[in-house]
Image (cartoon, rainbow, N blue to C red):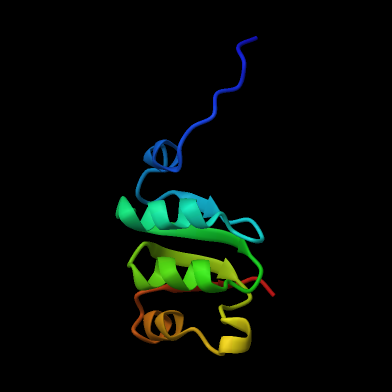
Length: 99
């Protein structure tokens, strides 16, 4: 059995096609989130995100997310998530409530 190979964030994200379903951990890997934005991934379906947070807000603001399975998105002490709210209200983001 070959030894596991470590890959860079850029290599990992290059294997994620547009339209893929992506689960973010808690806390999410910031380098991977930023790389998704940098590589301009589009149409992502985010799953298993408890209350979103800054990583989800960043992906939505960058236009990477098509749909989201979550109980919502907020920024904790910083309040509501404006990009999330705008995208849902404009019909640009499909929200699947998983409370």
